[in-house]
Image (cartoon, rainbow, N blue to C red; front, side, top):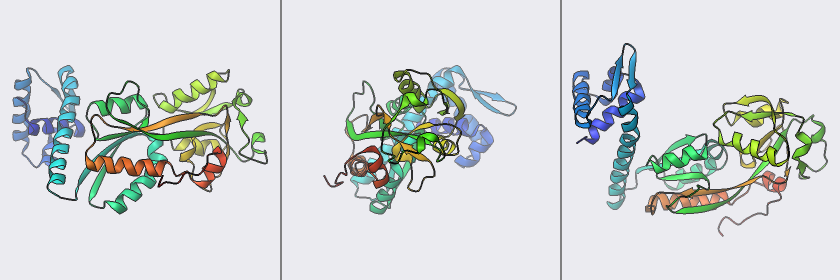
Length: 312
């Protein structure tokens, strides 16, 4: 039977792409590492890694085993964290998974507040481009809590965090930016002949933009696709084309002009887990729920969202 140490060796070799570097990080000799890997392969009935002149490559069996190895190590880490909490310790690590846009918009103030309240608890943040990848990672045991769009068919506990508003970003010299009140809705059909700042394929926001434009009766032309979600509003403000972005990503003093799309574009955000959360995860989810209901004034005015008392 595979041991946790052997699974740790496998994951480390794969992540570093080298037996030599893995042995250095694990503080073992390379022969000892190789011996444990051979023992693991014998126990699982076949080779997991192909040794190449410059690195390693997973075999089909290795690709099948690796996600389970990561999940087993994650569960073992949470077991030790739970034991420390039960013993009254204040340290430990909380693993949070999310999508790119949430890590840029909602999470930073939450993490800042969390650090002030629980300075001894480390946060490990895992980011994914698409909500389905986030859901799959959570199902595979790679985090304690997922924060993102509502998951379909999820059997574990799900907590509603509220509705995320989207805005259209335009450069300051755009003709559609001359409206006196930026809160006046902008019909998306007015942008049908524009080339858009789009998201990279595989980014969940790329799918959302295509769906929103399709409902408005057109397919968006593409001026540029940005690999980094954070670059999209900046490129739009620079004049490369309009962009559709979550309002909570926009910082005060942003150079571009924001318009509320008509019809509105919104999605529900949630925090979800595989099973009943432990007290540490619950405390983070509570803080997340309070913080996510506090809408910044510059976004509240734009989206027409009433202020919510975070203590409610």
